[in-house]
Length: 169
Image (cartoon, rainbow, N blue to C red):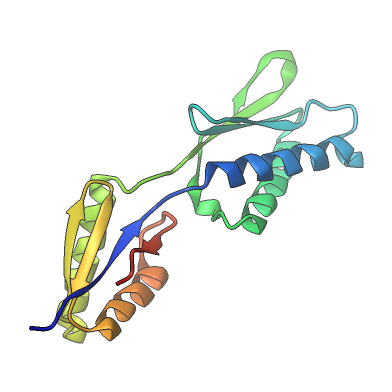
């Protein structure tokens, strides 16, 4: 009997890489001319998995977010991993914006992924099976080509969170 191939769909963030990207961004913000004498900056709370952007003006806030986003991309972390909250007024006439890091696949997103895989089964006649296991989704099938077709489709049409494919066997 043929052995099934499988892989897991996960959404994980390497917190050490986030820490490294934030350190680089803090150095750049500290040395840039357009941020001199301002309260512009970013802080990383590893425990709560949040980033806090601060700036004097809305335009500076956008520039700080842009610097952080560039550093995260260079470190292999997708910008869609940030769940930006609304900017709010902080003390001293400054602005503050919190961004939560999305890690793990919640139940609704897992259901959305399995639904997408079932649509693929009907449309492309793939013989695969998706199963939710905690915060991962396991996909099994007899043909590796079918599994690769699922991966390709999820990369193109998947949910708005960063996905990784692990344990490919």
